[in-house]
Length: 114
Image (cartoon, rainbow, N blue to C red; front, side, top):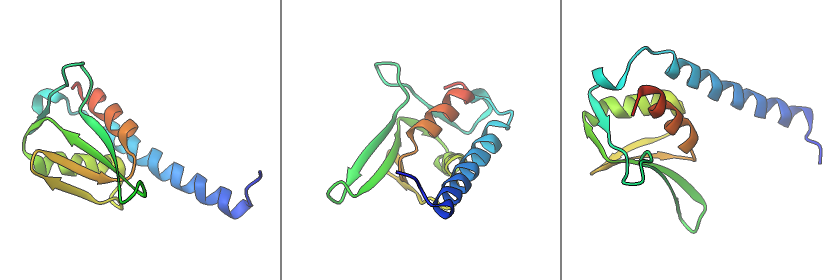
């Protein structure tokens, strides 16, 4: 099935915006040693970035757990990676982001050295 040119351009614009946000986040020269937060890996040596479906599987939420330190700084890093238009919410022991952002966040945290 072919997409109309308008829909194709909209998808390209969204993809280019996401790539621009990732480049901006990766272009920082920060490492895990000089950040105000630390993310611990799970027992299986994975990053604690999870996906949860809510409201009868109509709402997708990405959850980051097992972090220590300043959660406001971590929230700002996450919002710069996923884009400012996505809602980032801090809960006790976790940070939630609306949408599926597992790949972007795990790539970013790996790049930082966690």
